[in-house]
Amino acid sequence: MSHKSNFLAPQAFEADVIDCQVIGTVPRGLNGAFVRVGGDWAYPPKNPDDSVFNQDGYVSRFRFRDGKVDYKGRWIQTERYRRNRAAGRQLYGYYRNPYDCEPEVAHVEEPWRNTVANTSLEVNAGRLFALKEDARPTEIDPVTLETRGSFNFGGKYKSQTFTAHPKIDPETGELLTFGYEATGLATDDLFFYVIDKAGEVTREVRLKVPYVSMVHDWAITDKHVIFPVFGYVTDEARLRKGRIHWTFDAEAPTYFGILPRNGDASDLRWFKGPNRAIVHTFNARTVGDRVVLEAPIFDNNPFPFFPNADGTPWDPVKGRSYIRRISFDLNSKDDGYEEEILFPDLPVVDLGRVDERFMGRDTRYAYTSFNDLSKPLDRDRIGEGIRHIVNSYGVFDLKDRTMRSFYAGPTHGLQEVTFVPRHAAADEGDGWLIGTASNFADMCTELVVADARHPEDGTVARVILPFRSNVQVHGRWYSDAQLQFD
Ligand code: V55
Ligand code: FE
Image (cartoon, rainbow, N blue to C red; front, side, top):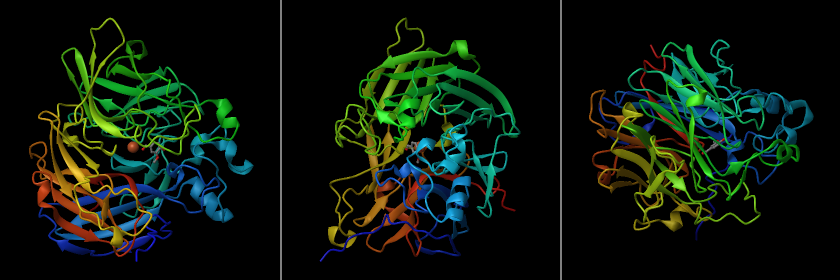
């Protein structure tokens, strides 16, 4: 008889595990830390149909030293987390809607104060930031994982918001970033920034978007930056009615804004195409007069909790993403672009990564998860209520259009994959695939390590936590030096 799985129930505690159980062997030389953020409901949401993107931020870290791994997990102590804890209940309403919050925490003029800081991480100038696109960074102590608070780069970072997907230029070490809804709720301002290795804001460009939309991820090249604007819309009237921040308008065109990295606002050019959803990207490059972007892209609304504007129910088939290549001709007279699906038979999870040492440059490989239906699934042991398991990582060769895969086993669901180079000078793609997995049979979280050159050989090491840790949104690998360990 099968049990009902409760894997996604709130974890509700903080934890330190010293010298975790390891099955297999952690590769020699894999020293550093896998740091991840995600969300958990410290108190249940006010609205049961709210987005999981509204969960309280939680940061955790697997630190690797000579084959041994320690784990640490902490709530992110945002203003919102602290106020809820003080009240002992949920004061905040729908995702990114201060009008739906209790009056004492409405903060309509300062919506960034309501952030949950639950999406991703970045390190700049020795500082570790937890990021959410509705606010400036929340600084985290990289050693203790205690929350230090909101950070504004000495007042020089003016946007009220900061993307969860800043990019580091591999040659200059600069942090390229932006914020949308930069001057307040539902505003069409997008500010682009360059922040140098020392944490100084060296450049700001103030831009306007064609319509207010979720600019969740973007892409850089050595010469350009690319901002996708797609499908999700909002406005002040919608928010005043107390609705969830976004609705998906299937009639809204897709725009890609391309700005030369050294350009000013008048150099921004918008390309326009049919309705799509571009939530995450892999990478982009400038080749002569062309800009090429590779990304998993959806034909329609990817997220069931952001309702369709036309009132139709969410369509899970249209809500699948396929790896595509988009090419922009910078010499063209019209505003169109070319779009091609590279793996038309293989829907993938839109949480893809590349070898970040080649960010903005020509890359061959992209890594993302998918569900390999040819592989076994142990329904009895995983329990009921787990309908869709993502059981594999794919190593996608975007040049040859071939794919090799890692299968996690019949009881494991994979979260986002991260690529760790074998050493600083290793070739592109020579390294490790790491990420957390939900072991639905044993009700625990594991970190899996696989060889990116031999993914089909399976797990090299599994680091076992004796409990369920929150499902991550995004994770990153950092060296001890980047995280300020002695
Ligand atoms: C995403 C995730 C978010 C968010 C907006 O995956 C977009 C896309 C975890 O929060 O606030
Ligand atoms: Fe993201």
